Amino acid sequence: MKYLKYNDKLEKCYSAVLMDVMDQMNFRVQCMDPAIKPLVPTMRTWGEAVTMYFETVTEVPEKPFQLEMEVLDDIKEGQVIVTQCNAVSLSAFWGGLLTNAAVGRKAAGAISDNGARDYNEIVSLNFPTFCKGLSPYDSCGRMDGKERDISVVCGGIRVDPGDLIFGDVDGVVVVPLEIVDEVIARAWEKVQGENTVREELRAGASVVKTFEKYGIL
Image (cartoon, rainbow, N blue to C red):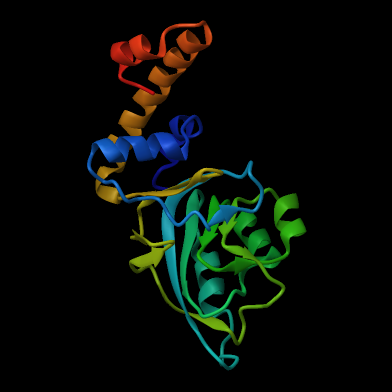
């Protein structure tokens, strides 16, 4: 919800340009492990991070799925669910029914360092879902939500509630809250610059001279 005002600009951005800007700002390690991928390459997501932490369990908890249900009930338009699943094996944190709930509340996406299932249903709803893989295994009795709205580590990158998450086929980047405004402003400027460079290169301009002129490649 926090970043809805930037939707027009973020729609035209991509993970690489945001990462380029953060490189220049010396935030050089902000991209999640490439094993975390969109279910289909065309899926894109961006928005305010809402975090959850899971741990391995060996028995079905007294209140299964409690944390997930509470988070989905509270989710706001434009928010992205990000989970750290400290689990020993792949099982499905995310599935079709949770996707329907997320769509109903206008959430922007779900990102997990574990698994998902109900691929066809999720894809039919076109809900941006990023994970390490698919599995028929339910998470119930295998991992359980322990905390929410805390700092987590997903795909090797720290994510704090309120950070900007941006994911596409190239990867998932995390923009810390304190630099979001500057990163978006710089990224928007770079996107426009790249469009100019792209046109000149396609028209046959020298790569070396174009880079000297714009400093963009």
